[in-house]
Length: 621
Image 1 (cartoon, one colour):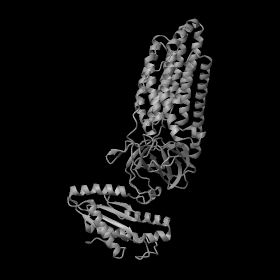
Image 2 (tube, rainbow, N blue to C red; image 1 turned 60 degrees about the vertical axis):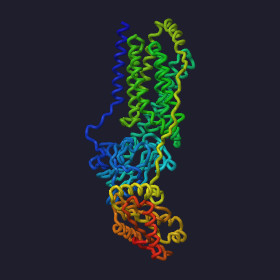
Image 3 (cartoon, rainbow, N blue to C red; image 1 turned 90 degrees about the vertical axis):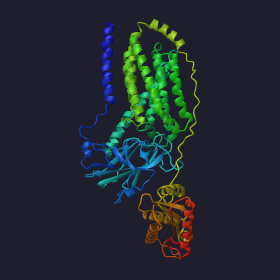
Image 4 (cartoon, helix red, strand yellow; image 1 turned 45 degrees about the vertical axis):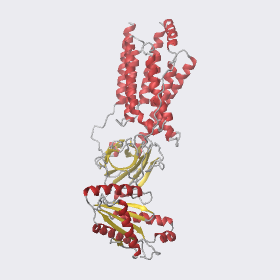
């Protein structure tokens, strides 16, 4: 009779646990088809935020690699053309640019045009973490920032900061522009999905998630501390301390992932420390669970196997402590394989415990399946393979509830066999004495950090001297192979020193930016390049261009700068800012070099300046 009642009790709990896991991990979408972003546009003119609720901005966003585009430029008649479309949410590492994946490091602009119907009041945007800094703009207005995005590692500051941002009212179309940069994490990009909806519903959902998650986190921490205090009172068994440490680990992880509830307590919590905590809790969770299971089923869990798993996981954990973020964030994929292997081992040992008729083995199997499903889900979310959100804390809470039931059942059953169990515990105590003999492999120093070279001039936002030198060498070799001419234009702002001295350095910088943008707009072909050569000097590389054609382009540049009518009362050439230009064109061969082309263009620039300035010289020197 007793065994029958036991079977019925376990069966009922098994069914309840399976139903709970289905409700826990099911991701049920709406019955109707929800709009998605296609080719950088999403049409929400038929979406009723009052009735249909919040909407996730999933799909193909416009992507501009290595560019921080002016958000206002998207409202122009001809907005910038993207380098391609990229799936959001997701990492940008595999985006193909110039025939190769771009990797994790870099910076980029994301853009999506949102078409609205009757614009409701008080729309909000909810965003979570980016990798690893971002600025968010709507219709040219900055509405939020996480960290400081920048085109170099020295300038940027990483941070994860979930935000609810108010959307400006009165627009029928929204240009949502996000500047994202990453020079720290192994993966870059727009990781998590953004949601748009009525402010009240966005905040209601956020507050609900906050309350639920903090309840889960608080439960995990309290249960963890409770079981560790049990170990202090009953040191003869280590099961409570492993279980308590595991609960604390999962609870702490929940604070720094997902909605990052840690920010509700510390607004300026260091990003480097937060990312290390996130990965440490992953790498320590597996061995802690292993030690817990080993303490529950000591006869089935081989000690050498346990020590081996512990050693491997500690190597991963040590990498988080002593290596840069970029290095240890790349270890998640190999650790995923370790986690899968360990999960299989755990299941095999649990099945063996069932076959040996260990008390509570069936319930342990059900609880483990739920927890491992949550663990694998979180690993896949971290790897940007799925986007269901982090659920390990909730899965572990279910696991603990089942374990609490299991402990109660064991207590119910233990009074009949207490003497045998005491003898068994004494025997197992000697067997559970741990002698850590895992050999720590020597860590390979990270010697292949990605060095990103800046190719844009910081002031004028056009190509800089480094980019000019590289591009001239490249195009010289290409024109040499194709036996076509290569033209070069060198230009100088007339009397720029007087302009700078009389109007001030800020006005001088504005003048340089204005001239640079005007020169860049004066060329039309994708292969042509305008760059800042140095100081107030600019240059243009024109592949497959004759001297006659280059002179026409140079005259267009001169005329466009003069048309800007930037006042220059101290110029002897004109009342406005003007430029002088020297033009040269070679057909590359063995007798010529890029240096000779630069020298000839410079000589002709000198002739233009000596000839009265505000002119183009392309004749013989």
